[in-house]
Image (cartoon, rainbow over all chains, first blue to last red; front, top):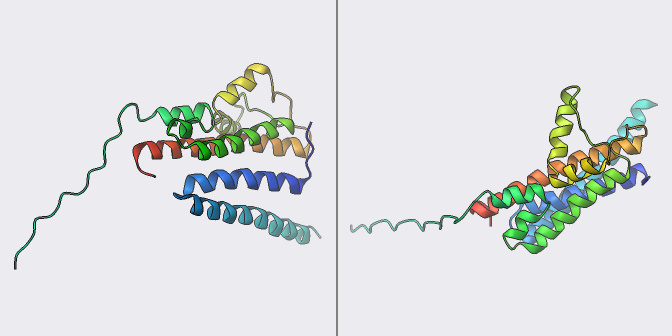
Length: 59
Length: 135
């Protein structure tokens, strides 16, 4: 059984979802790559921000 | 003032054959719709991403939704069905049948559902390529 850390799971999720989003939502390879990177940063960034928000709410 | 007649708009060639073939193939096998259209790199990236997400979900002991007890289960079944043959293959092999007992297993369940939803997006993208809506 695979036991990734929570952050590793976030990174894997963001990587695969961003790849598909980039390919499906844009027309040219260059724009696909840029959109994929953009989605990846948003996925990971929002997970970090929300995690810290929940940390402070729970205190 | 002379006027020139409007030039007829360049008509797009209508797609020949069964236009839904890439959609159906892409749903059944991740990336297959793009392979049919000769988009090898896109198809390979989609196949690797979707299959890896599905397999990682199973490796995390995620659950495959098999029966509908409530509305959320119905959404889970719909998401899982998006994976096409992967879902039916794993069902027939008895994979993903254990109950979710850990947080990681819950993540795995979500990985499997999202892999199915991403596969639907990829299959629709292949359909759009086939019909000329996207280049």
